[in-house]
Picture 1 (tube, rainbow, N blue to C red):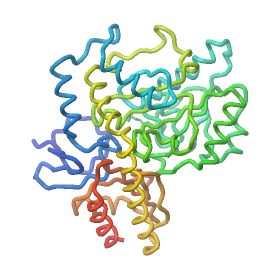
Picture 2 (picture 1 turned 90 degrees about the vertical axis):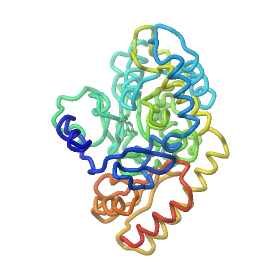
Picture 3 (picture 1 turned 180 degrees about the horizontal axis):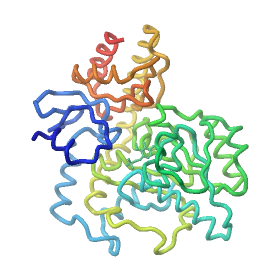
Length: 390
Ligand SMILES: Cc1ncc(COP(=O)(O)O)c(C=O)c1O
């Protein structure tokens, strides 16, 4: 049996896979099991942002793997301490909780927001407003938080206390707010929803609303954070800060790690024993993530992401001018979406045949999330193929 047949026989059939098996990765390139080379414009869905098998990350993993991999959170380790202090130094936050995935980081954020008010005696203040078309994960709390019905099918009854409003609509949000709301949760740039950036005025107004009403603001930067949008954190494009932020995906460049960051005030919601994770913040994952943060937070690295993102976006906009099938071009930095009139899957399949990996979301949107180290010439090569397909 080959890898595809074995997987199809023995792994739960929850992923609609595209029929390719990959054997090797280096930088922005992948090789399938037949040795065919591909340029990766997806990076494991915004995960391998420094490219596949980045030498410094590999070195950090190797070194830590031969020193100490796990001891449990009953004890202290230097890599976890270093990563937490680095994340706080680079962000609005004062404290970090480590998890293993995006959903777990969001689960922690939801629990923290609820407990923050319960501890203050505000027992009725447990509701969270999220956005339509948002995506926050697949655990029961995070799929409840997600603003897309298809993710919830078959899992009812969901958690109490969530409501959804249209993204970028401040009046709708104001109408939903009352004194039972503990948090507003959103992605500064919606990813799975179709690459939809927040409107800058909207995000500022949301911050103001939270300040006026004493509501916690949670930013899910699991997809749009970690340099993807040209700043270390996407909300830094907007000049405001949240009270709580979640990270995962690119934080470990492929090693599973999630993190919830919070201000000192918000962090008071958790006490000893309120939340825990066996694998959260292992020395191995945090050693890799520390190296990732060091590289991505470099100003010239981020400047390069902005420049390449702008270059790529202009090329996509030129395709929009030329081809009526292109409805819209959206995104920030190297998280870009090209909305078609229909049938993203056709383009994904055809580009795969030509040696490019991208993916389609919401049926009509082509998502581009290449490794942040992608070269302009690879962007040019993709645009030529996309042009001829259109
Ligand atoms: C914005 C956002 N939040 C949360 C998640 C869930 O992350 P994970 O799959 O690591 O649980 C994702 C995954 O795509 C995401 O894009």
